[in-house]
Image 1 (tube, rainbow, N blue to C red):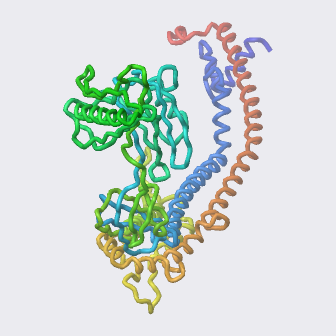
Image 2 (cartoon, rainbow, N blue to C red):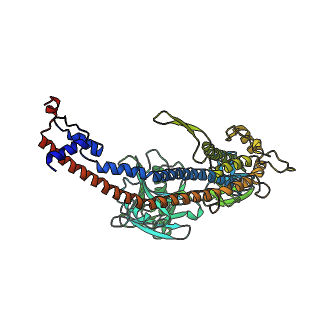
Image 3 (cartoon, rainbow, N blue to C red):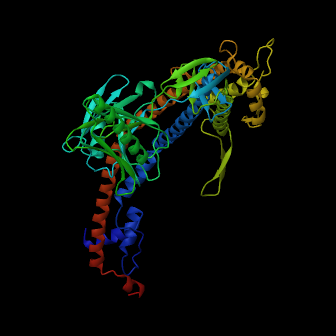
Length: 585
């Protein structure tokens, strides 16, 4: 066939008449392919076809979303229900809130106490004679913490018999107060040494780490021996206390008594008089004399002191006063008290075990006046436990009610739909709602004499939505006035009261092995696993379809591209163009 005949045949099959002056090959393409486009979007065509094929999978996935939401809602309900169950268990135990005891002190400034669970109720009297104390000593006054100490030593002896001796003076561990404190603290004697400084100078304070007679300790130092001695300074105008001083040299010795209110000047005069009188008698008897002279003076700060010197400057003498001495400020003592008339002692100010279950804190001496301690049920602990049960019950029943609450939603087209919670059709939730509400109707068995026979007796009532309300005034009054009846309502005669009854009901749902929640969750998990398997099994079919459709559409696309090339060649051959056709040329 000639080209002209072929074209005529193609034109005739395309519905063109012989009167046309030119051929529009796009009409030919439309006639052959149903479209005037030049190709096919293979990916879009395959995706569209696959999307249609995946319709069952989308249904399965939607079902899985529903199952996931149901699982989440069930877990939330299970947790809330278990909280109620735990509250009831707490109310049904002998070591729970009903065993909590409170102690009221008639004078908490002097005596306070706490009671462990189960302590017997009752009253007790405590008289505090004295508190337990620590032992404390302080040293002579020095100018500063770093002033060199005189050559001496001190021995610390504990009540338990442990001893340690510390040398003072240049070149020793106790070169000054700071060094001496460090040495004492490192000796593990149960004491703490601290340098205390004020406007008058520095002293070393040594205090026992614990109270009680067993923590007491003493400090001794050797008497001074030498040719010159100075007593610790006292403030100008200050006076001495009652004491005595022994001054000796060889076999010669005098004892000088000081009286309260005496000054160093008066003491110096008394010493010189005593030495003079002794020497007169000794000379008459051919005995050794005491060559010591006393003088009162003052230091650079104006404080007064007493000095003893050897009259000949060479003969040593001794004084029963160390070169560096300590004064006892307080002896360690045990606390002393009487409890219910029985005298007791304690190394600390806390008495434990004196009365079973009670811990008694002694805070001050009562000067013979007894302080009453009253042990009774802890009303606030009981009220808190009951309110916690009500709160957790309301949370659980609220989650149940939410499953049956109808809510509406509007889609993008303006269509409104109404729906309930994801568990509205679950029999477990319906059964739980009925079981919880019925359990609240518990009453104490007939024949029991009690002021608390039902929740209403405690001021607990049900609202229209199934939640509970508590009249706090009623609840507090009943607990305060009839704590035993409240306990009997919850625990019965043998832990078989309201708490046990309600717990048994909830256990049908919360039991970890075969409770309704667990059975329901296992069923949902099985359904979800089955859908996952369906989706997995469906994937090979989708992959196969995608391969086949991709090949078919790709082949069609190739044919259209070939036709498009042929059209271009024919248009060029025939000289067809849009402008000549529109001009009738």
